[in-house]
Image (cartoon, rainbow, N blue to C red; front, side, top):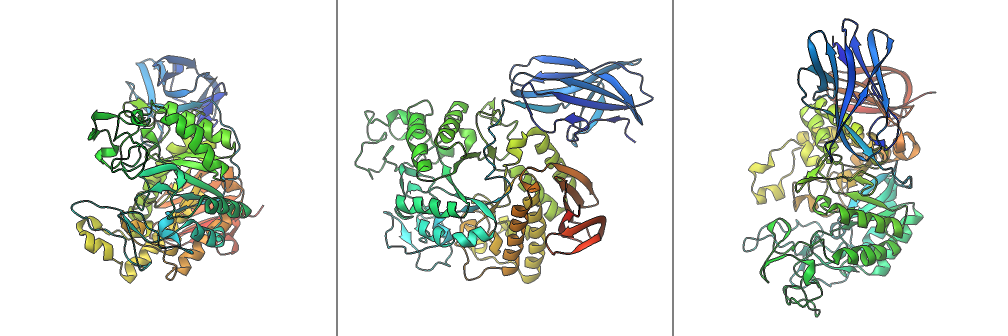
Length: 606
């Protein structure tokens, strides 16, 4: 039996739950066994940015099974604060710090502190996004409609939609110069298919002119890649999507350009003088040369992706011209590629530009860790102070869900959920981009197959298919993972084709064409049901998360007042007494069995 109780994940111990707006009242409660005779109990908080300590006393509140002490205070500056409790007894001074579960542990020295995030406040104008479903599309690989034969210089078009993407190096390099002809008109043609999945936002990988199939080597920020269509096509996409209450989110790649961009112009593709060609170029200051012209800073050492000097007027160009243009054409927001490589001032400028162009537009950052306390390039980032990002890609949930469904690590999942809820503002939490797969990861179905593909060569990887039994087991794991993805706080994002049962390991095998003639209909229908459940139940938009049970491979939690999610990744049947309807099957009962390696979403009968 524990003799001290405190966990900031639980509202009884810390209210409000999660990050707190500056000057907002914070209540902390800590409970001690009645045998403790203590005095001078206080909470010590240390600001992350300034290192200043503040101390607030806790006063005796009541006697229950334990002696309960309470503190109430407010903090007037947005920052991360690290805190612990301190008290004296007849043996000396002691500290109450944090363990891996976020529970309190008694120590004789300060160890790991609890985190308290304070923010400046968020504008609540993203209700269109919350509660729905996202859908990520790599335009070249989704669907081709009325395509022409045009192809970029030094690129080539596949003759067969179902061929493998090029995966073997040419002279030691992967060229990414093969195309399938997917285009904007193709996305328009499939909007009803996407809508059926419950989608409220489509996230497009880069669409600006570039000379690779992934288009992260931007050549012209103001021009739609002609292989995808015209600006009129993009505008029509936004119009047709809006008719279906779907917003279009586009990729912002602002930390580097392509070496063959009009701005750098290493190979002379453009008539305009680029930074590589002359120091007199108006773009020269956009880049950071080490030895002009052939040695320059580039993204992760790839000389085809020269890095941007963020102290140049490139920032004005992006914020005053690029962002307004695409939002005016109909975009509903941006996802920022590798946002940790953009300095804070640039991110703030981007945020202001996005909100000025459309106050309801969303700004999502690519962050692979807990974004509330991320350190990048030697300093702490403040993505959630209210001035930068609306939300982030939720890689922590992805890793924890996979470890749970594939390897049974329930406690890591539970602790990750607790930590993110404790550290993030509620406004951010409700808009988290919850992913299981992206263009940068293996296909989630392949991950759920538990295959060590690292032992395969590229030819074996390209042609690998799971056998029938392993495929069925992977489908079971994926369904559990998808239930968690769709019901935990945030907005689930389906990577195109995951709902169809696509397999594939890392790039380019996770970037194959959509299998329109080979859709796993059972899995597709499962995703359609999940999307319908989200759209019909407002608790998924902003309902609080309440943990009910987490042990023996089983996780049970509630969303809002009426939704209960029960996931059983054990080998035993689990049972729950609840008067409810199963939203997946339509079954109404007062007693539910949850079979091994399955999940239920129940709605309590009120």
